[in-house]
Length: 235
Image 1 (cartoon, rainbow, N blue to C red):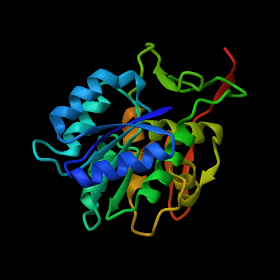
Image 2: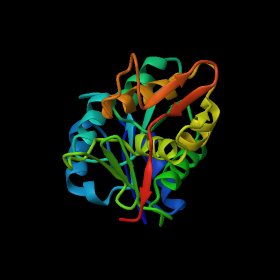
Image 3: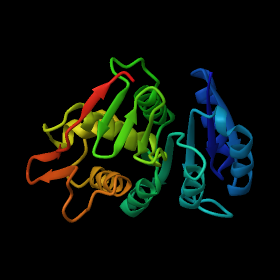
């Protein structure tokens, strides 16, 4: 059973989500503030399938918790944000969140987002295991990226999914709608800049100059292209 850790300071919301998700075959751990969340995270880090963070909490905020989660785990994170505040969404994505959902929302919508993320991050048996490009190795089996020194590059699940799609399609111009569908399971609206934030973050992780990127290039009016040579192998 997939285990989900939720932090929200509203008791009615916590109980509603727990009841609804458990009916859909998820195990749910609840926290009411940052302190209790961190205690549960410490106790269950290796068992968690997903984390849900409310931005507004009595003793801290979801951004600070997101940052602490990313220091120890690549578990997928969904942020619960105010519907009118795009800044919350951008900051959350920059800190490593995988998705966001605006309030007010229905449990059914949240469940759909959860299923989409877990489906994208599920470990699959790949036809090839390793993708190598300019000093990096992407390992599909262990879902990680290593640099030339063998150090793990810190990526969120969403970052990994985006990079995986790029290396599987080198030299192909990929438009925004395709990339959003592959990473988030939905198209982005005309004012949604979350993909651009994610691309910038991925460039930073790969030491790709944001002003003159050599790996992930912007094709004005068309999308993005992964321009590095990629080799594929099983070992």
